[in-house]
Length: 115
Length: 115
Image (tube, rainbow over all chains, first blue to last red; front, top):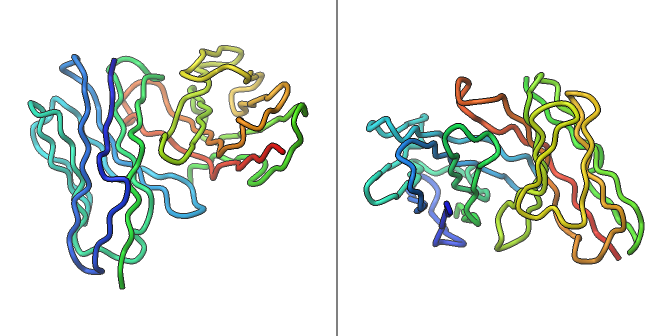
């Protein structure tokens, strides 16, 4: 069965610094999709970034980028120039191919931004 | 803008009461989901619907039922609420397949307390 592991329940970073959130997953599939979602306090969860497993190039969205290591089954999120608005719960998620319902979430990492 | 609306942000109910949680999306999405979010456990899928009147059990369907009579509306029903159902409930929707990126769109959540 597929699993997603986020080993850091909480992290803190100084404003303007860079932080990396870790995520590992387990699957026997060769093609799948990975996501990072952000859930700010008392606000709805939104997509930060997605990665398709067949693409070797790491996805980037402005200050957010991923380090996708397919062989190691690792999918970390790097946030550059951290801002106070980045404080949130971050969830890593795996989506199986051809399965709209098979989306597995990690347990989340709470990120604190220190002013 | 894409919108998923959950009818109640906060509810307090008594043990044994019947509880309805409503979710409406305005994006003409085929798929709708109900998740339960608990600290340290991440998001767990309760039920999934891929079409009107169609539903699939998720990982933790016990004690819950769902209704999807119209494409835009997906209701979660607790027939007889119990204290262990105190939680945050998240509704989400998505298009079918990965042609549009497979993104889930979430509502703001309904925090249910059962006394």
